Length: 180
Image (cartoon, rainbow, N blue to C red; front, side, top):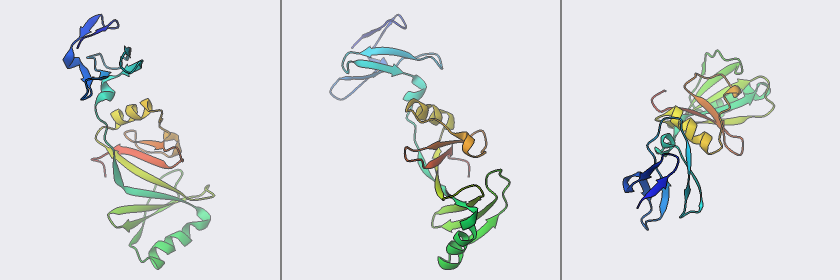
């Protein structure tokens, strides 16, 4: 199978193409310079196919061990007591230096850690989740290509991590799988 690429003025050969088991053309993979993006008409799908080689690599996400519950100041002490005194879970207050979180407690929750974060200006609680990936930059580009943009203004975090939200508004942190 051969396809003519006017953008590169060359003929793409079979090894440059990704096909289904039925032989339908799914995508055209072009060796290109980083950051360049081309669009080629895919006659089988009859629509424009955007190709960006850096995004063709499979991006993998896994749930991380950390779960944060952002709690209004007025409910914070009661919530800590609930996990510590009623559920009898292991709860420890941890020092924190964060402009939006005034206090935090770590709760051992099976294989996970729940962080009870006191947020002085919240009126209701929110649950924030952790996702890990092997390449934060690639994952961020992949999510952006799917219309999911970072929202790092939510809370200060290191530059090698990013906040995103799902369509329902649940906040997730994207971080490298090797960072604890």
